[in-house]
Every structure is written in structure tokens, then in C-alpha cells.
Length: 118
Image (cartoon, rainbow, N blue to C red):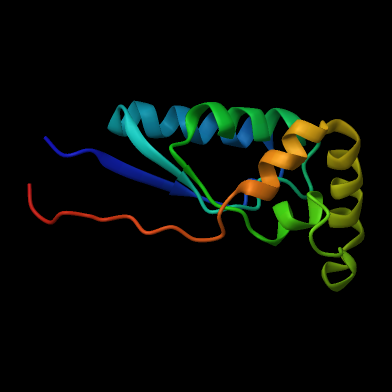
């Protein structure tokens, strides 16, 4: 029996939506390989909870510009939405140095080998 892969992105700190989609995935497919393409934080009110849940449950996690901004690797200026900037400020207040260091270590790309059939 083959394992299914569920890929998500752009949660943007919306913890309740993340929990809901994870429950829907489990209800529909059972245990899956979970992949996050990034944008874990940005506009939602629970950035830390969102990051911790993704850390706990996901098998592969990539960082996008949102994680780079939060970790201080790039500036928010090009992304200028006031709501996004506010979400980043909230995330920076809530996230520990350990979380920020973990974000810096995330890859921006990854190869997955998929077998056809079965």
C-alpha cells in the first residue's frame, strides 16, 4: 500500500485553519506524509502555535520569504502590506530565538522521489 502525500502552503499564522485542514486530511486519507511549502506565518493571530504544530506533524518543511523575513534574513519592505507587516511583528514578539534559529536552517527546496504505480 502506498502512502499519500499532502502538500500545504500559505497557512500564514491561521492556526485554526491549519488544525481543520489537518483533521480533514486525516479523516479523508488517514496517515499521510505531510509537506509544508512555507508561508507558515504572516497575517494570522497565532504564529507560534502554527509553527509548533507544523514542527510536530510535518515530515518535510520548506521556508519561503515569510520565514526568511521572520528569521531576519530579508526585509519586509518589498512585501509592504500593512496586515502582513503587523503579522510579522506579532510573530517576532512570540517566537523564541530557538524558533528563529530553526527557521534559518530550513531548506528552500527539496527533492522527493515518487514511485509510480500501486
